[in-house]
Image 1 (tube, rainbow, N blue to C red):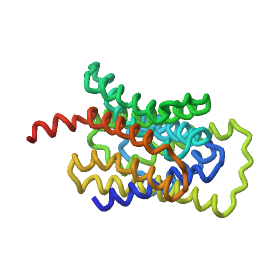
Image 2 (cartoon, one colour; image 1 turned 90 degrees about the vertical axis):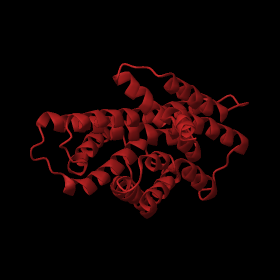
Image 3 (cartoon, rainbow, N blue to C red; image 1 turned 180 degrees about the horizontal axis):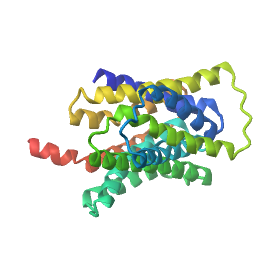
Length: 283
């Protein structure tokens, strides 16, 4: 578990650092994915992997990392870092709903979790009509969550069909697909980014440490803990990111609304993951 805690803390700082950058979202996405790709290239081992599988992996990466990062980084134009961190809590709920959709089933638990997540998002803006910019930011975060969730579901289904694949050997293909999409989006804009030392260091942290080293250490740590611990640690970065954004980066928040929103979203995760049912069966 120490590795998972370390990575959660690394990721918790990413939200505030991206907000401080103030750079174009497509540029940040392309830079981060390009740096992460460089980290994973040495691990690529594609001998015996069919071309169709390689293309499928790149396509999944285009969605899970490319589209996800593009929407995620763009949302920083409209929301505070701690709000973005909180709204990413809906990802596990979306994973459950998408998995059900692919299996042609619809579980009431998943629908209840989705409703609780929606209430959690609404709670943070209670008594205050959100602006168009705020709603745009929320929509971008949810698009990011959807892309990340869809990528996870598709990757899992592909791996179940091809159990001989080793994740480390093919993971670079996902980043290659994501980088291609982000690069295309960046070139569609007129960007003239001249980075100072601080911005360069932040991008190196986000690409090499948070994305590259972070995902590698997470996968390593995941093999050393139970399934229940891994599920709980998947969302440990959220309260950490909110705390870091407020306490380290000096953001302000309406604490009652923030806590209410967080309570709804954590309840959504608990319902989606079946925590209540698991606790009842244990007692």
